[in-house]
Amino acid sequence: MAEDIKIRNKKASFEYFLLEKFICGICLTGTEIKSIREGKANLVDSYCLFNNNELFVKSLHISEYTFGTSYNHDPKRDRKLLLNKRELRKIQNKIKDQGITIIPTLLFVNEKGLAKLEIAIAKGKKLYDKRETLKQKDTQREIDRKSF
Image (cartoon, rainbow, N blue to C red; front, side):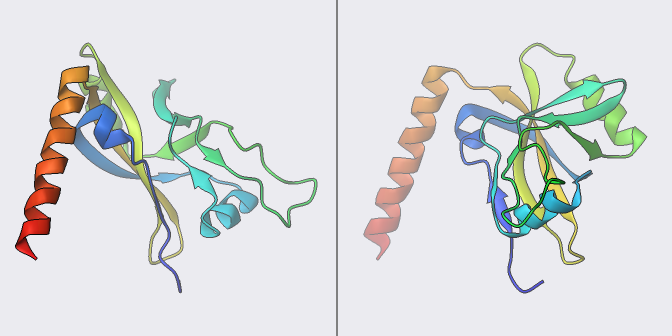
């Protein structure tokens, strides 16, 4: 692959405490992978949900392929995530706690040309936690400025 495709969910680390991360495959159609390779995907409002012991990502927006015909895909359809049973059981046991959710943090194409999704088990932040995160970023930015 000539170019490096990495689509991030920038709001995820601001809105949630990321507890544990997993990398999984994703079931896509032909036009979806072509759109991802063009960089036309959005992870902002997406989340993961279990359905019959299978993990699906919801609201992952992959734009329609520009050169697609009538066989183009639905941009916001549910897509199945590919994990082994041990990982699925581990995730299912962790999200039984109150306030724990699964969110996608990174969509990328690996060296073999396959689309992979990094998901994180996350706990929502309160308003004062978000303020604390902003303060830490500001102080780090000031330290970086003074070091030059």
